[in-house]
Length: 506
Image (cartoon, rainbow, N blue to C red):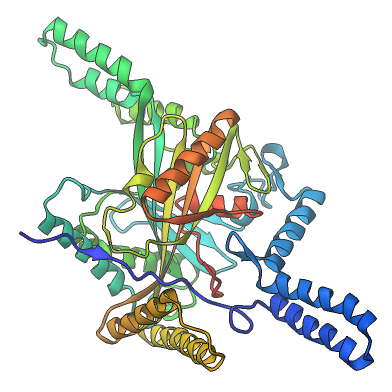
């Protein structure tokens, strides 16, 4: 019998102006060196008592780390947040305050980093329409589909390994030179379910000759279980880069129409690979479907009313009912960004970033603890992949390997012993380079988790439960301080937001 495959070897990105120091950190160290030389230049013990402690403080600010961030990074975050609070940019109000276009229409109104996005409508090539999120600043186009997945926990080992290999093959197929798809995002969240859709379906499919006792028992069962039920929604977002697909877009007519056509073509080309991985595409979201996904993230309570209306829209007896939400009403009525909290439409969300994946060997189901249903909170998890082409992957891995080799040689010259962690990182980096040379793909990966409650009293309990579940999964997570609104856009919304172009530490 086959054994389940295990996984390990995730590498954290290292970036800095010099070594692991940022530009500010390097300036602090340089300033400390200059200040430390002043007493020597003046030949004064009194100056040494003043300047040497100051130099030590600057070095501590540059190298000291709290919760994974250096002191200078904390200072930048705090100053940026206080400026936003002082200028009221941390507060967002929609409705009558939203800007309108020249023709008087009110576009989709979203706060913060999402304000730049535009929702476009494009033909899906099958007679339907497709909602495409356009980011004119980054030059990207994102299509979103809702998928179902049979899972891994209850299948035999061979089938589990096959599905995992197929998903890996799908990611590897996107790691090509000049690939048009620049980002792949997997988003899953749990939402409350009052059982309205199930009751409506049951009423339509209950036979007239069904025993009265059975119908009554079924009704009582649904009434008791409905209010405590939760449903899971899984989305896959594919982001196309207009700069990478410039020639293809030009050949398809250019502009937004050409970009949408190229994106649809890429979507159809990868459907076979997704099916091999066990992912079943339920639907590609229309503009109203995208708007509903946004609306239910900002206002979880809206899910109950929308579920009933969507069920009514499927019933031929109802006329005039439409699925989804009008894109103009997708955004929140109001939001407020705190230092470690994000408030939106009667709900509160705290977002965490995964700082480190497990160092030990883990199975493909190691994230299951994070997806446990909770009655007091909604959870959202986003995995964002950025495929890297072979040439860039070779360059990036060579740079990482050079950094580690240089650090090891420097420690050897200074007489410092190499730790087991450093030796393991060097071995992992070499193994990744060998795998890359053998034809495997390289991707950048980040993971964010959001927990949302509708009662502020339950927030700390929900956060504690999430941290405990993350520990069970072997993850090291950190609250996103000072940037909860931007983190919410990645963790709680399936819009394909995520990794920036500039390499930053994760």
